[in-house]
Length: 417
Image 1 (cartoon, one colour):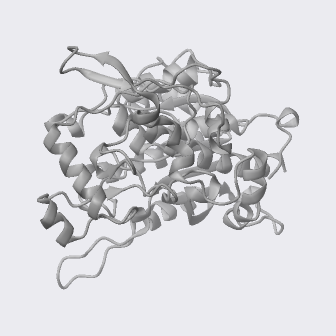
Image 2: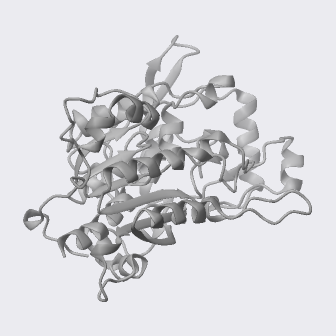
């Protein structure tokens, strides 16, 4: 998959449901040029804008007719129909990951979740803009059937409904699953991927994208000087231990306020950390704030670390022993990639310290570099959980940039031929 980006005529893309920008960061690093992105949450969009429109990773030629602010596809379709129509045939790629909460196998899998319908907005944009290529990312459950009411036939997986609609628009659609850990991400995060190609661009020599990306996985890792074996969690966040760095004041009162890790760049970096720290020099990354755990919570975490096998969620018996009703608690294994990160920071505990992860540690596990700043509130609760996207949620929802880059390079290859 080695591509000379200097000789590559950059393709243009639109990122729908962009979140904080994991997929766009990967596509930009693969040589793509952004036109615009659509994200409805102001906090997530502030992170996106800070890094990918105005900052170190800027690669968008944002149109003057579109405000650089949080918005929705529905708003775009209603306010700018003429401008969108003018893009027909002038955009190479539409990428994005429609919200997945209704499909998640880890959640309640609600077939009637209104967010499930957002893929229809993606399809509407494809119909109007008519790009050469499509890239859609979602959870594994996007390709699983919903449980049918008793006595009725199981519902078709939503992915197949979307695939059928895209094929009617003139695309050959390829589907498959990719695990982020295969592309240098220290996380066993398997996602359903859909790649669409205009049918007129396909000939007898066209290769299945999933076969091609598998063949070129090794070259991708070598090109980034990443290890060929899966990256361990300790290689990703081992330099962020509180015990090694100490803590300093972050916010609030001196006694009861928040502290943050007083990061000191180690003399020796793992291969993975060399990529994460590239361009950061001696500067500290942001989002190192530690959670304020009560003594009783710390004691509970120590007990969980004592009885839990690292990398394996607590069993029902263990949860009973600990006295918790929480379904998903896992202690990270230092010697393996992480389990899939979620938007709930207390789903995973640090492998050697009695605490949850910082936002920066989650960002490292997602393959966000240290000079990618995450903005907004750290957490939110109550009814606001479904309405806001604070830092932990932004990172938990993101497409790992390394995976986005590998997919971007793959589609580059088609775009060059």
